[in-house]
Length: 441
Image (cartoon, rainbow, N blue to C red; front, side, top):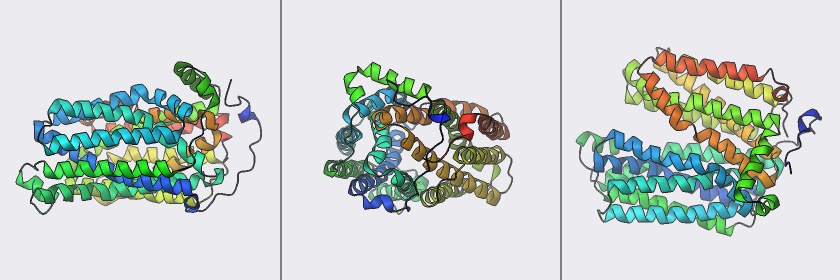
């Protein structure tokens, strides 16, 4: 059974409901719970993201080992993401998120104990990274599917905007707090002083940071336990085998030309931007600006601040009537900005361009994800969103690898090539009737 009508693009779209205010989703008890839980959990994740590299470097002193540990976590995310979507539809987003957080509590608590008792070994970090990647493959589709189940359709933009805003804020605050905890427990005044001293951070600070992450997963699990909604399950997913359920999700996407185009574009955009920005920007800051690491910090902060403003705008302003056209023109705009990044000679202009790129991405993320969540039937939400998430994260290792090769060849080529292809793809998409007919829902 096709879960998306193949003729949906040929009929006149119904008038979109007025968009709710930015904070309207907070009026819904279940959304408040999931929002609070995930906000706390994302903050804890920042502690883990700082602690794990410190731990890896302390054990190995090798940048290669650090990259290898991160890469191992990406393998199960890519391999099992579609399975995670099928499981989400079969058992409900809330249940999958709860079990995922319970497993994360166990993993982080175990790692904390290994660190604090000085029993941790390098091979354990690879095992932990793989295990976390495996859990993520189930958690991410469930997280993407739960918002439409707990808010009204006209509140979806509000819910997604609030989720993204708190994620950006946690990205600002979390790493600094984690660094302060590790540095303080290591007997120095700051993480910078610890770096300059060249001393080992010891196990207390790292263990405390990982332990804090475990506590945040407890908060997230309790919040999910207290919820009443988010429990809708797909009847067809329960009646089919797991493989059959996955195939049904793939057929649903392929039978809907607009959905198919949007998911393919999402994969292409993430592939073209994520690697060049994450790999190329540190090299660019080091080679082109005297401020070095300080320049990188300002650039990344500008990007994050722009994304925060973009999410605020998407959650506040009504979606444009010509949604497809506006989104593609915005993507072309940040593609143009990306193409310029490798050639800009002044730091203030580089910061300004990155802020605009961040604003565009923040806005586009909220409006497109909200549109998808309104278009996709609830019974196949997990499977379709798992495809979207796979497009976002599955190609990142390849994108980073190619960017690592090109960054030593030419920075203008890396950023200019990626940005130019983004512009071409987005403008070419405007030649399709499906994109031009895309309207708010």
